[in-house]
Image 1 (cartoon, rainbow, N blue to C red):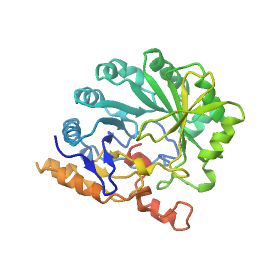
Image 2: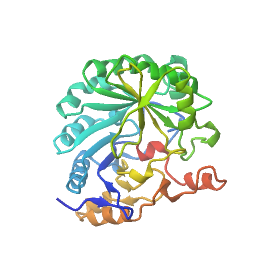
Image 3: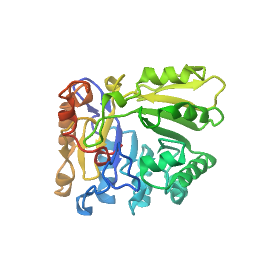
Image 4: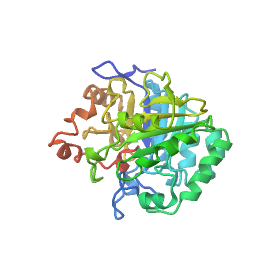
Length: 330
């Protein structure tokens, strides 16, 4: 076992998020705004074997949890093989998906020990779903969410809340938690990335969300884990939970434990940091990449990748130097 990955602020990083692809079958404008987006050539991507090797190195460096992301991870043809191989590592395994293809992988997920999944769903209205995603997969998405719950999986629904798009549905999502103990809604603040037309005025803040929910429900906070990104609550008499991931207005950077590996093998120490380091090239050369990993996390900023506050006039020029969200991995 190697020493843990610790930054200069003493934060131990033991949660690895691996993007399998930048491709997606949906076209949500806050993530992938252009229909003609150019995707990475296949030769640039980590192979299944390289993903297994890199994941094993990180586990030896103290990683205790791995999440597969994209793009949409389930559009990758060898995703079943990847899930099966990572399921053999001594760490927990989960993934974030839009659930459109999930029925094809129920047995694979169970055999790999996956017990919890994050599902991206921004609306409960079919027409609005089509407007956000530019696709007609609403009925199938809901059916697959119900399938996961019926099969005993814990499901976290991730809703990106935008003031001019879906904010009026917040309490509809909370209502879903009243009767389903394995359903956990997560409201996510709209975050700035290259090309996604972000503006601070479109954010529905942590306090605004709580105020809106309190108009209809009585709820209480729950104690969370040390590295939780969501501040969680349960409605009085409810079975599931809801939480708020307030990345912008009430950040949780002081307890960050996340490591991000892009589909082309680049290491990012923060979602918002424009700097990244190549792990795939030295790995393919047979070099030891551990020193690269340790050094990159010694360069990590305390919050938001070292950028100015996103309300400042210069912030846009800073965050737009970053990759698009879909090219980083959710």
